Length: 272
Image (cartoon, rainbow, N blue to C red; front, side):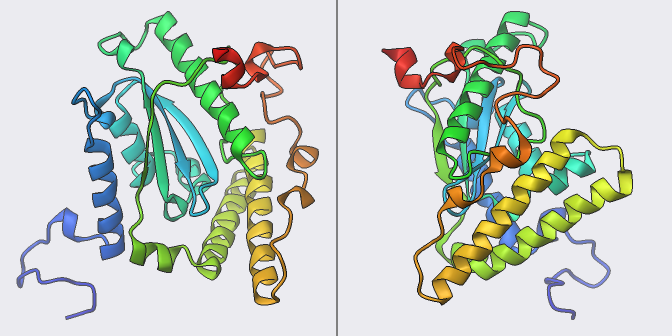
């Protein structure tokens, strides 16, 4: 029997659940457990129809923000099990780099039609607010969204759930610096290949290539500093905004922010 073939009987078709490698099965099991957890009201976090979600890497660095009105569980799983049909989307985000998720359900919108304009405006505002928070908390001031969310009024974020998806053993293996450097370099190469092969790709995709390259450079530099016994390098050594321009709005967004826009104020300012 070939290694990894399992114990399927002769001539018996194996179950689909048994096909992925153990490390993949463990990750999906953790993901399903996280999305089925309930809040104080007994509501399963992942069953909210409307909401916003975030992914974090092994350093707790925010790497992606998204929204959905088709249930958080469906959208998050589609991202993290590589079931999205857009091949480019699967190359932007490396599933093995996601160590934590955070979700913000919009329970007040339960049962609201997807075409409801006011609900969609609120969803956009929550997504943009979560995006600004991620930018502010990122050591690079940048995350891997191909498209910056539509500029919207900044609002206080609703209650969220943030949970670790990686066990101790998997974190030791997948979270090792050399493993992460190799995978991140592979992700960057795949992403660059998409741009090369298609030619006409979005500016956002090319922006992600730059941001991923910065993340790779910093991770590799941190590893070098570690083996030489030096302090970690300063993330500000690479000025991402100087390389890619503003990360607060797309150039095509006519409502791009200014220094006086309320959306640039912190959540604390809005709540005070």
